[in-house]
Structures are given as C-alpha cells and as structure tokens.
Length: 283
Ligand SMILES: [Zn+2]
Image (cartoon, rainbow, N blue to C red):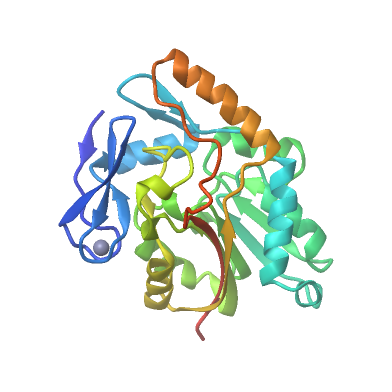
C-alpha cells in the first residue's frame, strides 16, 4: 500500500518523535504543538475509500471497522448530550441538527427524544453499510457529502469523528459557514494527544485513526476556526460488560494470530479522558 509523509495536521511542523506503532503504522508526536498523528499515512484516495467500505488494508490482512449498532451508545450519548445541552433549552424551539459521521445513528436516536417537536435531524455517514442499516430502520442518515446538503444548521455534532479527519483545521473552518451565527457545535473525542501511549486504553485502530488531540489542541483549532468553547466535560474510559466480552473474544483471536492482547481493564491511573465539548460559532 502506498503511503505519504505529512507534516503536523495542526501546525505544519515536520519534526516529531515516535509515539506508538501498531499494525505496521506509526503515530508520531509533533515536537512543536504535541499533536499525535499518523505518519506516514495512506493516500487521501485510500482514506476516502476506507471510510466508505469500513475496511483498511494492512501488511497482513485487513482491519474491519464497520462494527454494529449499540443501544448502550444511545443511552450514553443521551446522557452526555444532556449534560451539555439542558433539556429545557433543547425543547424550547425546533432545531435543525446535522450529525456528521453518524455511524449507526445512535446520536440521532438519542436526539430524537431530546429535541423539540418539529425539529429536523439529519446524519451524514460515509460508510455504505451503516447508511443502509440506518435507512432500513427509518433513521435519517445519508451518504451525501456536506457540500450536497443545503441550508444552515442550528446544531452540528461530530462524535468520535475528529481523529478520522485528514485536515481538521480546514474542516472546522469550512463547517463554520454551515452553522447559523451563534449556532452550536457538539464534539466528542479522546485526549490521547495529552498522554503517552501506555495510558491509552486498548487498540489504536491504525490506520483508521489519523490523529489524536488533547484539550489544548481542540481549544486552539476551535479558536482558529471561529468558535468559542462554552463547556467541556471529561469522562473516564469504561469497559462495559458487552465490550468486555467482545474484547475478550478479540483477544482470543489475536492470540491465535500470535498478536499481542489488548488490556481490557482500564488503568486506574490513566489520564485518558473522553472530551465532550460544546462550542458556539462566533457571530
Ligand atoms: Zn504540530
């Protein structure tokens, strides 16, 4: 597979130090801003193709990232969204909410019970299998690109999408004009850019993840792209009963392939956190 060398996705610096290796890929840490990013990385055409199919080619075999719908996620997203957007606010008037990287529609399902009646919810998702699954269940998710969707939104969300963006700064700058003035952004991502690999729970899923930011990186990008951070919640990683079973089965598979097992228990001292951020488009 052809790879290309890139500079830091945020600051353009090309000097870096090793951060981690997995599945034949390297994550490096920018010596200027500390962003952790995949370098070298697949060509943009291969990154796009993998987003559509959910499959990444590795030196040996493929990494399949399609996954499946999770009801636990719907409950989790409902709680975490409510912590940033109080119910009385969401119910006060209809919104037009766009969820980018909607997956199996779990956030849209959560929003469906949180927002005022008359609201319009729409999800964009590149992975064809996920779109098909959502559409078969009446969840409003499409494979269209952002540029194909007209109008402005009162809210835009990106849950666990940041690390898949090949050019985060450009993306957030472009997204700004799709939000109404003082429109709201909901972001969820990990803070792996702030910690060593040893404190990151589980697999890195390379090359599906392209970069890992920390709190400062997220604030810097949002500031640069014209948003103001309103609130930030930090959550510890937890392994649910369901994920623990899946993780155990995957470890058995890894063992048979003579690959290292992934720890299922989260280190109590790990500083890894999921960041849930509410930001507002500056007027
Ligand atoms: Zn940098």
